Image (cartoon, rainbow, N blue to C red; front, top):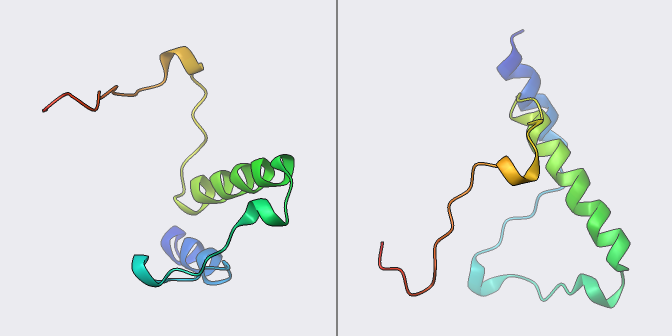
Length: 76
């Protein structure tokens, strides 16, 4: 088995729900989770996403992160 098969198996157990945007359930995590719990969910999902992608976490500083700032009024 290769790395792609390993990643496919890792994704198979993820708790994913797919909904068209207009039919998405009205989940409001704020109603039953704390800020810290929601933050931990984001951290867990981020780490899982990097792992599933087969990539290592970047180790650059936040100030040198590769981003592009786009202003709302910017036509490009």
